[in-house]
Length: 121
Image 1: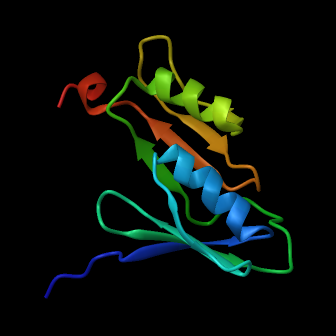
Image 2 (image 1 turned 30 degrees about the vertical axis):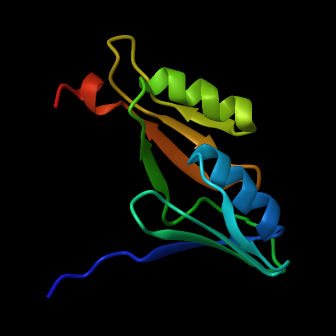
């Protein structure tokens, strides 16, 4: 038996706005937004959901996404920062190794890793 992750769900103050932001990161379109829930599909056929919750984010994520682009890591970091992310922690090294920890508009942390080409495999 094989188990897969079918979708990932984010709690959000504004599910539609956060879904639209993440959809831009993945160059996707929001599939639905009813005001309480919103979602978009990833190219890998998984869905990212956003659900309205009353409480704000208050501590570091216990789970976060690690993104790997087909473009160089630093190019992707700058692209996502330009979309409105903030730098939470910069673990990039002068030799090109490392990663960047960013936060989305509601403060959810995620990492941007080196591309496969930069990793050499």
